[in-house]
Structure formats: structure tokens, C-alpha cells
Image (cartoon, helix red, strand yellow):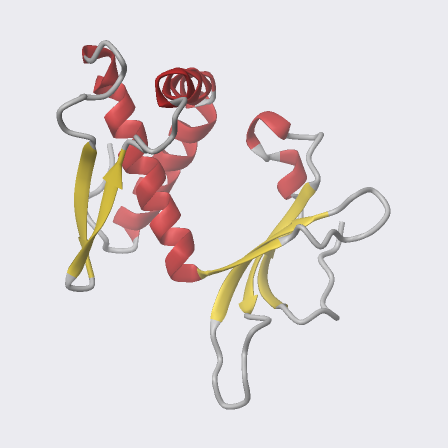
Length: 164
């Protein structure tokens, strides 16, 4: 399915077969495409690049399609990778997290740091973290494959060491 080019987001690089590779929803996904392009919020004289997930209802392109600045896409990838690493060791805690230290990590970015923590404000955290861990485990094949591919591409591009 062809991604629209007449809307405010102007696709430049596209993946028009995303629906067939969308993890557990592959071949049954409303997310039909991904694109990198010129952001819909661009003003005259200012050009930002964004990533967009294109959703299709079966009849029309959905308003629930999401557009993100590229740095947020990378921030999400960092958060996913750090979360997966945390859950590899979470079994050591009876509640899957330390009740003394909720912070998982602080990852330095642009002179400050992204604080990654267990959300203890969630009143159902003890139940929800188990459900999250189960879902993460169930989707491990999809996620790990993508993280390995990302690691290889990053190493090939000069961002770190070659992944074995």
C-alpha cells in the first residue's frame, strides 16, 4: 500500500510493507507503513525531519497515525533496549523490581540524563510489571531480532563495535 504524499508530513524514505513485519501483528496490522520525511509542523525557513507510523483502517488513512521527531525515535529505542536489559535480571527481585531503588538507570544525553525508573506511581505496579514482563518475554524474538539488527547497523555505521 502506498503511503500518502499529499498530507502535511512529506515522506522521503519509506517502508510501505510495514504491515507484514509489525511484530506479533504482522499481516494483521493497521500500521501499514513507516516513513522518514519532512515534519508536518515545519514552519517557513525551518525544516525538521520526523518519523511517522502510518495507520490504515481498511478504508482510509487514520488520524491515529503518529509522527515523531527522529531524536524521540532514538530515545524510544534507547528506552526499549535498557528496559530489555533490566528485565533480563528482574527475576532476582520478588516483585521484579527493587523496593529500595526504583531507578533502573540514568543515561547521559546532551549534558543531562534520561532517568529510567519503575513507575511506582502506578497503583497496580506489582501486577502490571508482571504482565509487562510476560509480554516482553513473549515478544522477545521480535524485539531481540530488531535490536541485533540495529546493533549491527550501528556498528557498520561507526557507532560502536561490530556485533558478533
